[in-house]
Image (cartoon, rainbow, N blue to C red):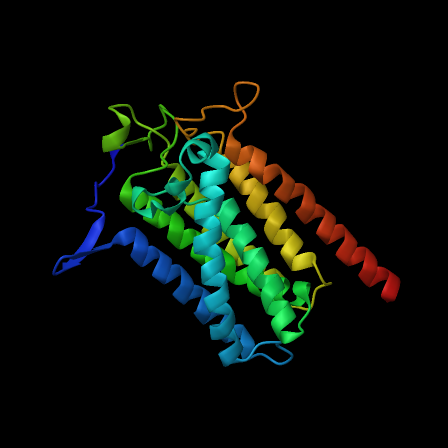
Length: 263
């Protein structure tokens, strides 16, 4: 049995301002995304310039933050929002949703495509391999905060989290870091290193993230205010991930079919 290190969520204090690890993980996420996309922008045939990468990062960051917050409120605490719409602005109380952040990035992609004249999938396919770096950083932020822990387990790597009682639990944040961050990055990075049909890279990202998240939800503790939302085992995370798997597989099939027809 392992013990969560109970890291102070405040990384450093500058006068009256506390800088939290979770906020630093967001900065790290955006920084890693910028580095990866800038590296790819130097390759022959890239649609990006260094200036365009920085430009898109601004819109993408807005999409992540605004979409993540709005998505959390609508997907996870909608009844509270109906009773008090102002909770949307209570960001200091926490609450971000990956699926909401992803939808925010989709909006940013469409906006940037309209602004630059680039194709929507040309943008999406090129940024998808860099996204898992940010996801991994976010999951490390969850682990540092000792939040979003897993279900009780008797596995020898079970971990006791201070805010979750005395029972050892799956360190599901680390599972998600390994799958959504490391594994997804490696697969997409090497897969996209060669020319692929339009939509294929985006489809692979959606399908694999959805599958990884769906699987980890079996050992992740459901949100206390929601519990299981269907059949006494289905979680909200699984409901939101299933469409990603279906859409992702559809994108891959369509991409390769169109490529075969045009060949």
